[in-house]
Image (tube, rainbow, N blue to C red; front, side):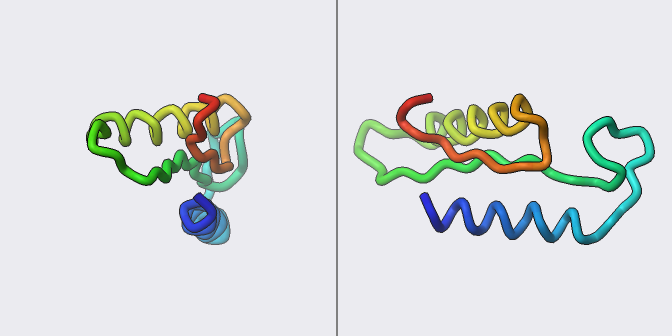
Amino acid sequence: GNGALQVAENLRQNVEKLAIPHLYSRTAPVVTISVGAAAIIPEQRDTMDSFVEKADKALYQSKQKGRNQISIYNLDM
């Protein structure tokens, strides 16, 4: 989990540092990204589809919280 969070945060910060103008955004005056991450120890019943679904839920959470941020899937979702 912590490794995924660090990679995601590095991506988010580096995109924001590019300072690409985003004239019509209500989130920020520059292009930003929201990231959803998931980290699991796979078990036999896990599938790639379920893993991607977990990351997608985390991304949706980032967008709901206001964008330009990261979220990681956890078992409480």
